[in-house]
Length: 365
Image (cartoon, rainbow, N blue to C red; front, side, top):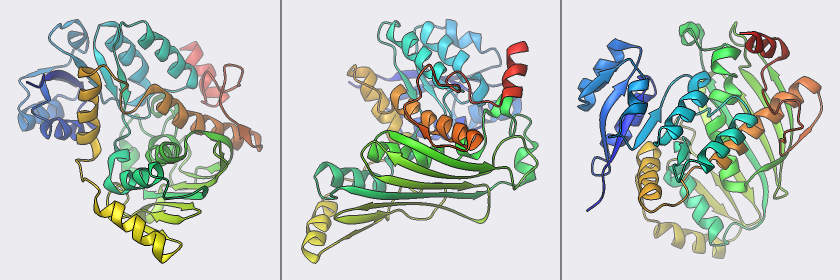
């Protein structure tokens, strides 16, 4: 019999989507308690998803011995301390993006997890599990794509003033960054998921759309460690919202749909260089086994990782790769120079990519 894992959820915003993922995995998970400072939304989620307990005291979750997992779906500036408490209380942890506010935090959390006696921390990158992207991964594994040349990724969304009426948004202290960190990070994770880590980044960034502290428009040129190149663009000023991923290989081109929030899903196009190769590609894709996607699939794989004692489907190294890209882009934007990766402890932004003034304020707080 499959063991059900019990989850305590912290948050009532993006947590609503997590709860749908748990609902689709009712044979694997039970959610007995939700914690949120927003009582109206918290109690509404409890009623919608049949959660028996509501609390505003987050420490209640850490001291309970009937929970296997803590799910952290809170604003970014709270992630590190909540993850630390979760792991050190003997729980596995799921945490929303962006994971933390520095590479140093990721490395410190790796050490915390390593001495936890087998507890697992899984960052959220649910977009990976769309059938379109998974088909590309399959073609790569079977050697049907050839050598990679160029990837282009567009995250062109719209966020107007009403979006930033939420007090923690648009501020370095609480959101930790702008559209590069909070919006494009999913698409950029797909770049790392397909090609591995980045080698060098050059970036321009600006705040053009809204009167906020953080960036809302950015353009990046990237060298990948596998030798290919990438061009990444992000804006929160696109009246027509699209997300597009296009991967050019020697033997085919793979291109996503344009839907802004489910771009990993089918139908992707896979165009080969010859009729003969197209036939091989089409035969493989015809046999692809469709699975659940999004949070549902990531949570299903996390259950498997826990019960079989394997690596989580998304690891701290995966989160590090994505945050290294962010760190390098902010550094390049400020210095006007390309920034090499990886980001090590000697790098000036290793401990924080916040602007100098924000770092001084945080240190004195």
